[in-house]
Image (cartoon, rainbow, N blue to C red):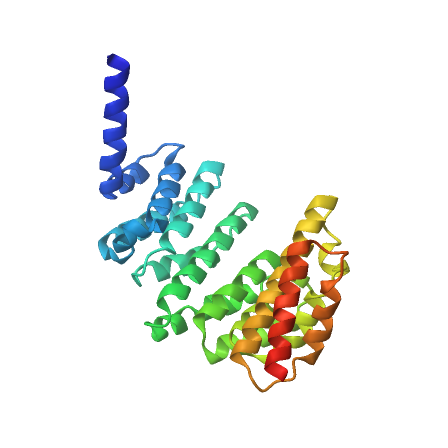
Length: 294
C-alpha cells in the first residue's frame, strides 16, 4: 500500500510539474549539481507540440535568460556549471520571445576557458533554432545578431563555423547569404558542406560545385579524420543524403541554372556498390532533374 501510494504521489508530482514550468525555474535557481537536468527536462517539455504555447511565454523566457546571464557572469568552469549553461542555451533557443537573444549572443561570444567552447557551440545552435522559427517575423532582430553570427563563421574552431552556417541561413539576410558564399571555400569540409546545403535551400547556384564534391562516394577529404570503419560509412552516407536533399531543393527553387554537373554526379550513386536507400534516393533525385531539364 505504501509503495502504491508513493508511486501515485510521484506520478502526481511529475504531472503537476509539467503543468507548472515555474517549478523548473525554481529548481534551476537552487545551487546543486543536478540543475542541468531541470534545464534538459524543460527543453524537452517545450519541444512537445502539446506545450507550444510555452514558447511564447515572455516571462518564462526572461527568467531563464536571467539565470543563464548570472551563470555566465559567475564564470565557473566546473563540469556541472558548464553543462548547465549548455542546456540553458538549448532551452532558450526554443522560445519565440526576443528577450533570449542578448544572452544567447553573450554566450556565443564568451570563451574564457577551453571548457566554454561547448557553451559557445550550444548558444550558436540556440540562435539557429530561434532564427528558424522567428526571424521571418522579426527581420530587424535577425540583423541584430548578425555580428555574432559573422564572428562565429570566422572562428578558429571548425565546429563553430559549421554551426554558424545554419544560423546564417536562418537569418536570411543579404549579408548572411554573402557570408555563406564565402564559406564555400573554407578549408574544413564540414563547413563548406553546411554552407552549400544552406545556400541550396535558398536556390543559390553558387552551391553547385561543393554539392558535386559532396556527391562523391569516396569522400576522401571529409572522412580522413574518422578512425572507425562504421563511423566512416555513417558519415559518408549522411553527406550523400544531405547533398541529394539539397540538390532536390535547389532544383525546386532555381529553375534557370544548369544542374547537369549534379546529374552526372548523382548518376554515379545509382550503382550497386552503395546502400540501397542511397541508390533509391539518387534515382528519385535524378528523375526530378531529368524531368526538370525536359
